[in-house]
Length: 226
Ligand code: PRT
Ligand code: ZN
Image 1 (cartoon, rainbow, N blue to C red):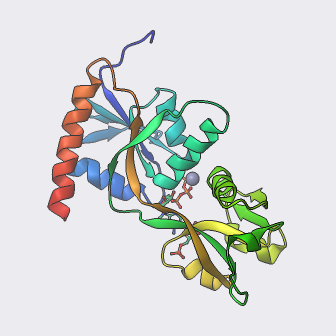
Image 2: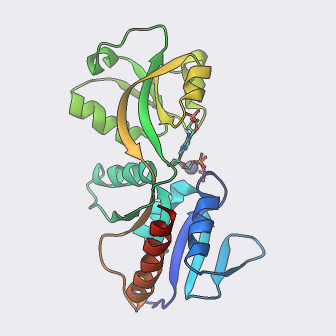
Image 3: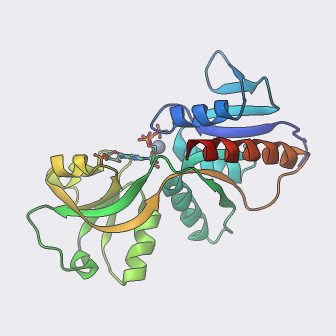
């Protein structure tokens, strides 16, 4: 690269389910930081580790492009990004460096709760609403099922009632949202949790050592929580 970077850059979710636990985890590693006025960037004071505050969907791309070194993100987002690359013929660029044990959820297929479930073949010819089209597409291919994937960026659970889809494929934690929409989970495509995402290749310019230090402290912090 034209420019070298000697500080580690970690992408975390700006606001959402993973932002507070991610900040807590970094603080438990002894990191203190100063937030920029626009609250998009945090300068690390106690360690050469800076934070970038972004939408969770942007985290894998920022690491793949080398803008950030590590990220704290749901496996579901990482898997979806990876499959979108490989389905384009690009090489897989990222891997999970750590599993964090929180942000646990499943990516499930859910159908109307008054319907019978006989198996994946039942989805043949159906419209399935999801925010994870590549993950769903791979699962359908694995099962040999031909269905129509309807990609929605949010409010997936109400798609059947709006007539946009017949069934949904969405994240589930308690199941309350599905139940409130008269849906029931019938298949699990992915078990997810928050992970430390990083490049498959080693880091450069001394950032490897900073990452090692941060991850060692993280391992200690995670062990204390057990
Ligand atoms: O703005 P940005 O794009 O950053 O945020 P976002 O809205 O995409 O993400 P956010 O904050 O909702 O979730 C971030 C990550 O948290 C997800 O990528 C998952 O890895 C993880 N996670 C864990 C969940 C859930 N549990 C979860 N329950 N993400 C979403 N949900 C939603 C689900 O989509 C459904 O609408 O919660 C509803 C279901 O919850 P239950 O408890 O009713 O089953
Ligand atoms: Zn998102």
